[in-house]
Amino acid sequence: MSAALNQEKVHDVLGIGFGPSNLALAIALEEHNRTAGNDPIDGVFFERQASFGWHRGMLIEGTTMQVSYLKDLVTMRNPASDFSFLSYLHAKDRLADFINHKTLFPTRVEYHDYLEWAAGRLDDVVRYDSEVVEVQPVDEHFEVVVRHGGQLAVHRAHNIVMAVGLEASLPEGAELGERVWHNLDLMHRVPELTDQPKRCVVIGAGQSAAEVTDYLHRTFADAEVCAVFGRYGYSPADDSPFANRIFDPQAVDDFYASSPEVRAKLMDYHRNTNYSVVDLELIEELYARSYQEKVRGAERLRILNASRLVDVDTRPDGAKVTVEFQPTGERSVLDADLLVYATGCRPRDPYTLLGALARHCEWDEQGSLQVERDYRVRTTGELPGAVYLQGGTEHTHGITSSLLSNGAVRAGEIRDSLVARRTTPAHDFALSRS
Image (tube, rainbow, N blue to C red; front, top):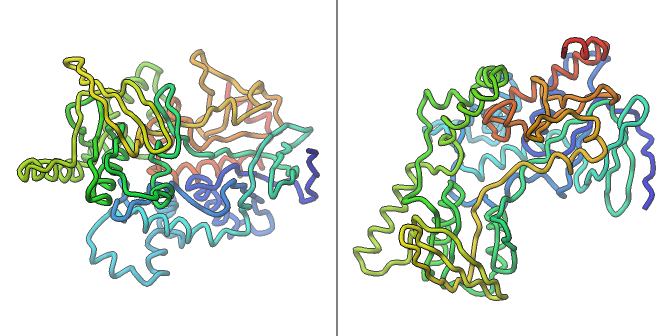
């Protein structure tokens, strides 16, 4: 299928993906353009979903955000912005009610509504149901092939910002099916069930795994829910004030300036702020529920700790799950009506994302992209513009790479870089790198 060249002008920046990261960038550009006079930055964003959506499959009623509402799309960059969470509450006539709620952590459903509210105000710069399939450098710009409605069109831009989010991470050899899901699909798939499951198995030890276990146990009142993980118990997240400094904007500067050895140590030290950890309140709730069931002699919540998944035999109505208790090697088989892998997410493969651009990029000895402090991919100098990454930069910028915590500041840094590149010759940027 041939692609038709779109006759619109060459955009200053083209964003691939329109989740929270590129939404924050679109806001930063919009706020810049309010004072830019006759020289605004022209940006356009393409999103393959039909409408704005952020992890809709995990919008479990009652679950709360793990980051403060002050780390919204704008506040850490511009506290006076009218795109803030507080501005959203004011617009929805809920500001006083939220203040009375005395919390820094809104529900995930409410925060998603905030994101939709912000995205709705920027409908003119985003095209939904539009999948970017190819990016090619051509002369003094990039040509971006976009599929929309079964048709291909070519759009042009001087700079590219990739923010395509995360994808489901599954154990090696795992296959999804009618009754075998990843947790990202949970709230999409539950309504499709034609009968209530009698036994559910959840694989994983992190926040999502605990939330899925809690949800299934509450939702299917007659079902046994088996949580399988390798530890003796869920590990609590370290959200203490000093540890949380790893998410501060200054921590990105510190991490970027560090040697590979120091970076590895920092990641190891603070892994328990984000990876495979659970809010203590939820841990205590699940424990209390499990204990009370033991008291009553009717256990529906089974914690299969210190265990590992050995084998899964899928079938149309569920799966036969073999689990090994690691200290003794004893194995048991669970006939499950539903198996949910709550095994985390990972950044999408940069080679796949970059396509033909990959050969122009610089890679380190571990096969990771080299990225400048302003989130520009380091290139050979043969490209007509800059390629920025939002996400997939954990190895260079630290733990906040794929999290909401630093999104507002990161968007401002990318915007400032785009502005600077319009007024500074590319040759000067090349010299500043050396």
